[in-house]
Length: 198
Image (cartoon, rainbow, N blue to C red; front, side, top):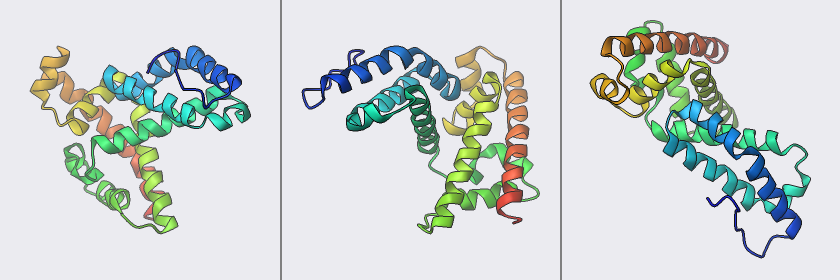
């Protein structure tokens, strides 16, 4: 998206100036925020473009946004969650990361919630909660652990491919992924206790 955000004549001058100022002030910070969570510059740029497109599409309400930065970060977090969903359309229990860690059924039960197609408000809420928790947990991981988890589980790359791409040994990658899985398991365990054992 062009920095100047040429949005056409359907916007008032004030709306156009608000949007251009938001792009100018927040673009670099938002891009950095996104990159630390998705680990890929091209995807991060696409997500950022979607965020600013949403802002431009809602030009009629830009004058009512009290805190533009907060609004943009909220939209950005939602776009990142959508990105994670699209990267892995299968449910959580198809992730090989959890196969050896699911003796108590946490992941398979949460997977059933995350893949539910029900429009029931409770099911929609629980599905959103599972994805939000997964996203939050991924965003809390150290960058190198998050990167190997995303590359292996969401982008379906082999450890040998990741080693070639990153220059990190397979053993180190395995160790990093193991730590990521243990952390995600603990975060999802809390959610399991809340939703399944309620």
